Structure formats: C-alpha cells, structure tokens
Image (tube, rainbow, N blue to C red; front, side, top):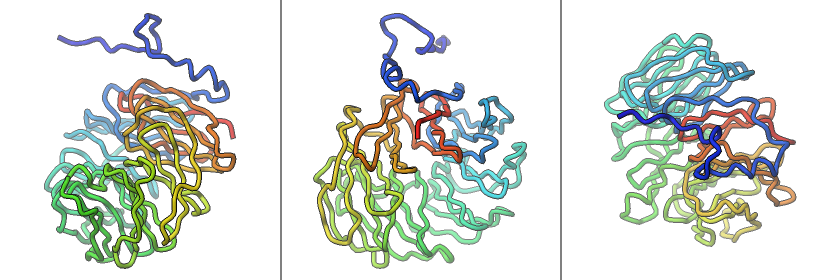
Length: 361
C-alpha cells in the first residue's frame, strides 16, 4: 500500500514538528527549496549556475541556481550517496551500481564511466586533472579526469570508503570502515602510513569524518569520541583528547588556528592547532541537544556553519564565540553544508529537501 508523502511544512495539526525557531531569525530566508522524491545523503555541488546532487533512487539531478528549477537528470543503476565534485565543466560522482560517472555539467550527458568491483559510496576529490575516489571493493582509485582512465589503484583496504579524501601537499588522506586512516602518495598510490586508535571495535573507525590538516599535523575525530592529532609524515599519534564528546564532525578555522568539533550534546568546541596537547580553547552552547550525525563544520568570513540530525542549520560567530542563528529546513538530518560564491548556504537533508538559504553576513 502506497503511503502519501506528508508535507509537514504545509500541515497545521498537532503532530507537525515545530518550525518556530525560524521566526526568531527572520534574516535567514530560503531563496528556494526543492523536494526530491528520495533520500539525499550527500553535499550538493554548485558552479554558481546550477546545483548538482544525487539521491537514493540512483538519480543525479541538476537544478538552476537562481530558482531551483530542475534542468536535467541522469539515471544510474544504484543509490547515489556520493557527494559530486565539479571541475572544468565536468561532474564526477560515484554510484551504488559500482561505477564512477563523469557527466557534462551543462547537459548531464555521460562523458565516461569507470567500473569498480562494488558500490561506490565514497565521494570524489578532483585535484588538477586527477580524480581521487574510494570504493567498497577494498580499492582506492586515481582516475584521469579527461578520459576516466585508471592512473593507479591502492588495494590495501579491508573495508569501504564512504567519505571524501583530503589532499595535503603530496599526501592523500582518508578513512575507511576497517578501523584505519590511510595516507597515500598522491602521485603513485603507494602507502605512506596507516593509523588506527588501537580499538578492535569496527564502529570506532575514523571513516565518516573528513580529516583536516595544518602544519603537517592531521586531525581526525571518530565515534570513540576522541580528537586525535597525527604526524603527517610518520603517521604517529601526537596526542589524543576526549575532553569534549566530539564524534564524526570536524572543521578548521580559515586562519588555521583552531580545529572545530561538534559534540554529542549542544556544544561547538575549538582546540588550538598544535603538535602539543592542549585543552578546549573555547566553546559555544548552541542548544541543539543530543547529536551524532557527521556534518562537517565549515567556516566562511568568521562564521561557522553546520547541520544537525533535527533538520537545522546553525551559524556560530567564531570571533564573538556566540550562536548567530539557527534555521530548520525539515525534520531529518542535514548533510555537510556548502557556502556558495555569493555567501548563500546550500544544504540538503536526508528526507530529500535541498535548500539555498540567504543568510546575514
């Protein structure tokens, strides 16, 4: 029996989730919203002309940036949980059908596809003319952006990759659901080092967060609730801190002075970036309640943006160290948000809502 899709924002009965928080911050307004017909569990990409994202029905959609109207769609044969990447008019994304697709951003036509041995749930990173992406077939790949030709593959994984790699100098860094964080030579795919927290618990893998790097120190958080600092060149642990209940959401300040973490209860915390262990430098009570979803913290012009499991996007003033505003999009988790070229916030939720928010400076 089919269940009718319920639009909470259009209903007025007592079961309707509260959107009263939006009335408290009238300067935050949706420029447009788009309701997908399936889950969206990734971060949309944009070139300022269109917005691109995939959904759990395996479709990649392109919306016009100015008004959110659909421009084209491309159907894959598996769910798309990969966040697309854009460069030189090409859109690259992984699919649960085991393929990496490169599409024309202008019209959605396929340029090339690369076949792996299992679902591709990880998200691509494009650097220069190279696409870096991890799969569920225990492989990590480097592909030529122009042709899709495999440049190298790393075969040392024992679990799937489900996040986006980070490139720092010639180190390619990412986590996998095999308890390990990996650093590869970006040019050759050779293993530089691998790190784990010493626990045998697979669920403590540093696999959902996107690491941040500053001054040859890699910072990562994981479900073991530690912030860990790792030496970039050796992969050795410099220090670990569980003073705050950080989990899978991390970020770094624009000036590189602080690593940000979202705790499991209400707070955003800031730690100094340093090779020496130190405590929380400052924290802000955002009052978001119990929290566990991996939504990275993004700073732009001294404002930190992040999403939560309750469907809210929050903004924190990194200078005044206060909450600036909160905006509820719907009643499901908000993926990592994107700050667009004009300062708007592009956000997508697990329930399939994509929104472009106009926000105060």
